[in-house]
Amino acid sequence: MTVARDIMTPDPRCVGENETLVEAARLMASLDVGALPICGEDKRLKGMLTDRDIVVKCLAQGGDPATTNAGALGEGKPITIGADDDISEALDTMKRHQVRRLPVIDGHDLVGIISQADIALALSAEDTGETVAEISE
Image (tube, rainbow, N blue to C red; front, side, top):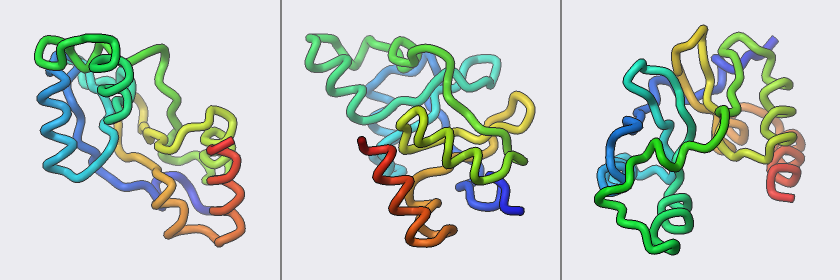
């Protein structure tokens, strides 16, 4: 049985909920990624922040990324998967919620992220194509 832990990218870098969007954007640029988990002072996952969130939810609304904190864009309860959950559950979760990146938790700790690229590397072309198509609907 393949579980989330088997295909995830481990040890993701977080942006702190109190860090500015400018700091988040710089971290994204240095890591060459388009999304980061938002972690609270308690080290718990608060949400996900994408480069698109910065543009659409801050800049396009006239917000100031130098004074807007990452936590302000973390909406609702984050969609996650357990590290030892079967990969089919992770795929179903990504499809159902139409998310391209799925944080993986072990207890309350963020231990990884499953992205579409992780799926493409680990699963069949058929499973990958089906997942990507349903996420993108």
